[in-house]
Length: 228
View 1 (cartoon, rainbow, N blue to C red):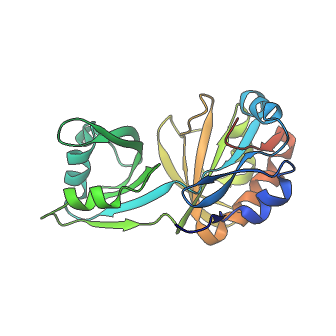
View 2 (cartoon, rainbow, N blue to C red):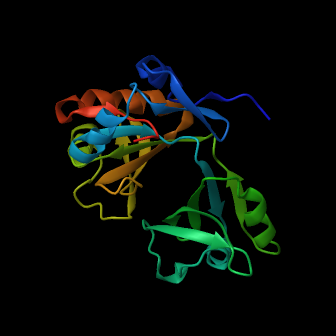
């Protein structure tokens, strides 16, 4: 088992983490709370904007003629009703209905999907793809992810992103740019508040982080850890 390493945003999160309160998440150092207590970070989620590094999520890209067939086989929702640009939150199960994991499935094209998971799922997807024409790629270390959550998060994105935020409905995803970096922005998150998740190239994570923190200052943005 490898020693935990920094996420693509580590060069920014580490100097900000006054508490040195970290946890291990899928082999990465992840901030639990930046301060000695998570109260200010929780309040940012509820009253302003919180920026959370969620890059340790496992991420997969499924593409090919039978990609839709594979997704439909594995998840519990009907992919035939899923539009391009839509995101499903869903579990995936074994043949007896036992939940293996849950996460989001984004339909980026007619036969192209991006899948997130808390635990490794490549083996399960590959087993279920036997005989199908589909390419399954582990893009976990190619795509960085930042969750921008809270009631002012849309205002932050309007100030920073070149994307139609106002037309982005709940559980939908669209492309845009932040500080010249091509990103996908999904109106998703697990905080229970207005929020977005930003998917960027791994080596551009710092550029996106800096743009969000700089543009988010008027909207009381705060880096936030996993405890909050």
